[in-house]
Length: 191
Image (cartoon, rainbow, N blue to C red; front, side, top):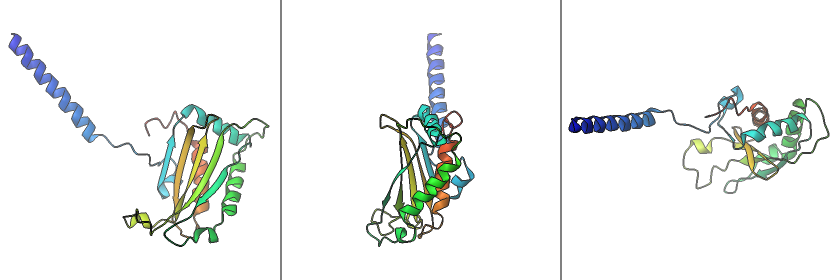
């Protein structure tokens, strides 16, 4: 009788281990690639919320009209930098400010202790680290970052633009801001 119990327990244990391995193998991989919004589906988009409880506060600050994004650029190094001749940072800043105004619901004079920033990266196709043809095709990307009062990253979104002169960059900027404003950590758990 003891022998049968040991055999049964061994068989059951092997079955459970096998079932666990099967579930891990067939499970869909979790990706940081965002596909929540139609604009995120048009180009490669990465979105991450690191501190879900703080994203609502960041959204309220934008709705109160007390947010200004710090901005910068990363020019290509190995290739001649031309993007910012066609699309200067000032033009991007103007689009960001105009887009933020659309989300102001109730202008208030409240303290903003969060950090809001974005940068524009110019794709560098001659960078020796770029091995695939696909990595050389896009024009660049915009990255928006929100940090809380302690300096920790709350939320980050990166959205590509394809045109080397930045013709489609306004859509990427608008999509990034829409991504920030529509992010709901309760609806996006596990994504």
